[in-house]
Structures are given as structure tokens and as C-alpha cells.
Image 1 (cartoon, rainbow, N blue to C red):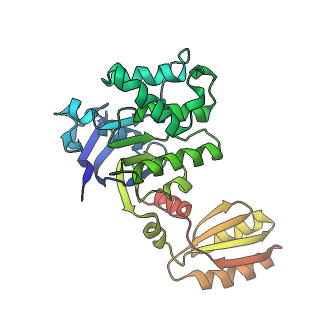
Image 2 (image 1 turned 90 degrees about the vertical axis):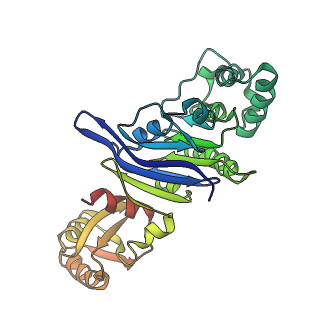
Image 3 (image 1 turned 135 degrees about the vertical axis):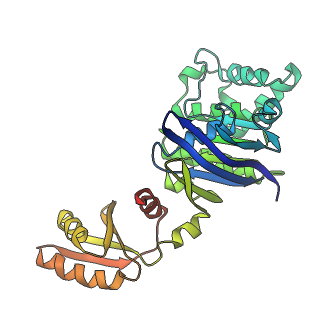
Length: 310
């Protein structure tokens, strides 16, 4: 396996707070790896350790075989990084912005222009080369950020919540670009942190972080199997009665709203017992059940269950 990202037992403390506590990662070429977890779980700090923006208290990270601490320049030449707060120069045009980042990374004048135009075409900004960055929409700014990260043809791409705050159509476009990067040629390795479970589902593997540690790691499909047979979908009215009665059942672990329905998580092997009890109890409390059945687990269900785990 051609590993492009390798981290071993990374730790980072801020005072008494364990921001990253023993994180290890192995990510191959052409693989999209998703880091998910609640706010404060350590996702951004892990990203910053991988790119050398922070120095680890212990452990080590390698990008394409280069140690980020001991061979910093060689390692940095291998990756592109898009942070949560990517800073554009709003008074510069799209092309001037990407030229700046290209020259900072050492591209010569005869290299940066054709590469910049190529990558702007790739992200769909070829018609906006002369528009000032401050006049771009939020989604276009994110695409310019991606273009700036790609201008040096990196083998590794690190994206820290790159689609937060942009509309669903732009998120879809952004992901199509990321998928194309991993499937072309030898394939770029991508590690992406995201709060969106639909995005996590697109990843080849997902690592769930909590309290600075990766507590679960697998393909999205295998992570979902952890709750097979334990998620009930409940529809009916009034919703307050359905929620209250469900919470009171001894074998119900959690109740969450999913649109106009509730997802009720039950103990292993308890689904049919809970279905029978809830139908009776909801009726006796003045509510009615339109549908109550076992459904396939959503990645959101796994996320919530892992967030609650000790």
C-alpha cells in the first residue's frame, strides 16, 4: 500500500487540555479520509499537526515519507492545505491571488501562469480571472482556496471543514472536484474534516474523534453496521407525546428528530419489544402512531451514539 500520510501516536496539550491524545493515521494514495466528531474533538489541531503549523508534544507525522518536523520543507512541498479560515487578498483578482500562492511556493513565472489557468479551469473559475476576490460569492471563494492549495500539484490535500457555510449546490460541486482529484492519474490523498454526515458518507474511510482520540475508524458502511437492528423510525402525532413516551421506555437509549420523524435507538435485540410497548403506550397517552419500524442506520445515528459514548 502506497501510504502518503502516516501519523504515529500524535499528542498535543494546551495546558491541562488534551487537544490530541495519541492519534495514529495511515492514508493511501487516492483515498479520501474523513475526520468527524463534535466541536472541540481535536480535528483542527490534528490537521495543524500534520501540516507542521503546530509542533507535536510527542509522536510523529510523515507526508509522502518526509517527517514534518525534521524534513519540513520537503514535506510541505508535497501537500496543499485549505484551513477553516483561508485568507484571500480581497483587493487582488482571482488570478493575482493564485499567482501569489504559486510564487510563495516557488513556482517560476513560466510555470505559474499556465498552471494557474489550468487549475482555475478545473475548479470552474476560468471566467473570473479578473474579478476581485472580495466580489466573489462564498462558494467561489472556497473554490479559489482549493485552487490555491492545488497550484503546486500536491500529492496530499488537507481540507479543514472546507464547505462550512456554503450552500448545498456549492458543496456538491466542491465534492465532485475532490473526487476527481483522487481518481485521476496516481490519485491525490485527501484528509478532510467535516461536520456534515452526507460528506462523511462520501469518504472511503472515516475516523471519529472525541476528546482528542480516534475512538472509531472504518468505512462508512461498516460503521453503520454497528447499530444494525437498533434504529426505529417513528412517525405520528403529536410529536411531543411520541418523544416523551419513547424517552421513558427502559430499553430506549436515545431519541432524535429526523425531519418529521423520530429515530429511536434501542438496546441490542430489543427492537420488537420496544415497538410493541410504544404502540400501546403512545395510544394510552393520547397520541397515534402512523409508522414504527426498524430502518437502516444513518451515519448520523452512529455519530450521535459515538458522541454519547464514554
